[in-house]
Length: 239
Image (tube, rainbow, N blue to C red; front, side, top):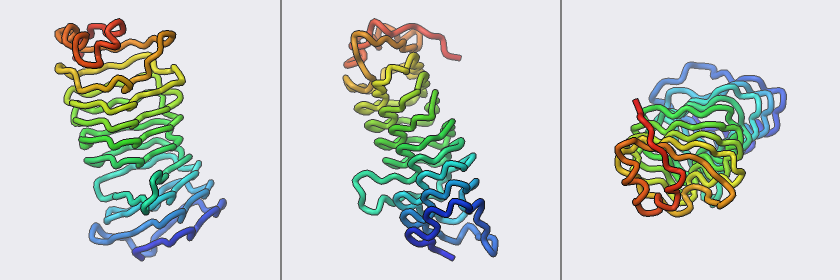
């Protein structure tokens, strides 16, 4: 088996699990085509093995009973040419991302209760976690260097963000959360990452605190676009 076709198990509400007749090897490949498991509301686990996996647009949207999802480097995403692909839209559970580069739109609209990014992650693509309304906090590991445009845009209940020490750029509207829930940003980088004026939501009636290394407070307060948030920047001793 190397392909599960479009709409193969679409709306199979009583499907609990998928079992392969033989154990796939790391040399095997499997393509999950568009909508193949969409709206499988009872599916508890993703049928993903250690071979090369390709997940197509909407393959696992609205799988609301999944308890955990782990994404390793053997998994790739194919948006099928869509300008707004949704791979896990509405899908629940705890998400662990263990791949090098998180592609654009990878988890757009997911309802994950928790997201863990491992030290294998180096870049976060544009809109990768946009509108993930289940996330309350996110830690960007020190291995990450780039956070893409709108990466966490409109995450409605995101309250706390920790940005790793080696991030060099925070993209346009990366943490633009207009719901006003974001209250604390911890940025561990000694040198202020490149920031855009709208990387964070900015409103005179909305206050959140930005904690930066004690030795870098003055640098942050004078850095391009960071100075727009100078009243919110506070010294913090990171361990």
